[in-house]
Every structure is written in structure tokens, then in C-alpha cells.
Image (cartoon, rainbow, N blue to C red; front, top):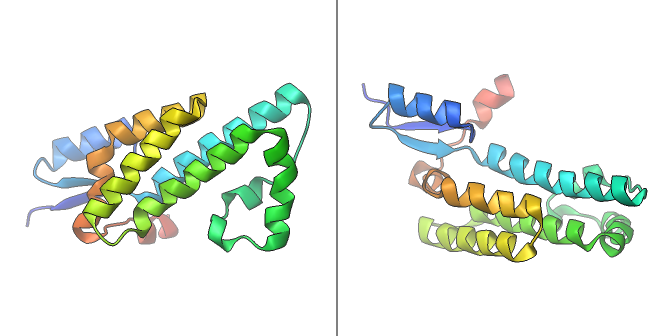
Amino acid sequence: MEVKEVCTDMADFYISLAKKCFPKAKIVIDHYHLIAWGLQLMNSVRTSLQIVHKKKFEIKEILQKQANQLTEEEFQKLQPCFESFPEVKVSWKIVHQLRKIYWQKNWKKAESQLRKTIWLCKQSHIGEMEDLARTLKRRKSYILNYYISRTTNAKTEALH
């Protein structure tokens, strides 16, 4: 039996290992790992600014939530941080756009959303978001391979 797909995180090691062991398999970047990477970069923007400006906001958990799942109260808690650090707001919006890649009905729409997200990252002129753009561009085909069969390793990750 031939392996048709390998679902993995974005690490070069795992991707090269999958290619070597399963040369005919499609590589699929698991969406959880991609979103986690975006969230990590967004949080890095927030923590760096808080350290530099000696101003702390206790909003990490709220920032992790999907924008459409925030309560009005949670959204209001974000506003002082967004006003003090517009870069956090921009990064947060980019992560929301990143999530939208996986909300699309098909590959073509997902590819369009991915291009939009890369563009927004580049336009932000925020180092971490520009890094995200480079990663998205480099891993584009593996990200979009999700739309072959909507493969995810969520069950494996849950067990792990």
C-alpha cells in the first residue's frame, strides 16, 4: 500500500523526512501548526512592544481566540492594547485572515485567501508578519494540499 498524504508541521526536518520516506506522497501542513505559528509571531509582537514601552496588557488568551468568537467584553479588553500598539492590532487581523484560509470551500478560494494574507503580511512592515509571509510563500503548496482531502493530524495530536 502506498502512502498518499503525509500531514505534518512546518519544520524542515519533518518535511524532508516525509519526502525521503514517502516520495510520492503529498505533503500537507497541518492547519493547527500554521495557525499556532501565526499566533506565536503575533504574541512576539505584543510582548516585544510591552517590554520596550514598559506597558503590560493581560490579553494573551483573548488574542488567541478567533475574532468571530469574542464577546463584546473581550473585544473591549483588547482596545487599550490596540490603541497603544497598532502593530498588535494589525498582527491580530492578519492571524484572523490566516485562519480564513481554512474556512474556504475549495482550493481556488483558499489560494486567493492565502495570497491576500501574504500581501497583508508584507504591507504591515512588521518584522514578524513579514517572516510569516515568507513562510506562507515557501510552504504555499503544502498549505493548499489541505484541500485535496482536508487532511489534518488533529486526532494524532490530541492523543500525543
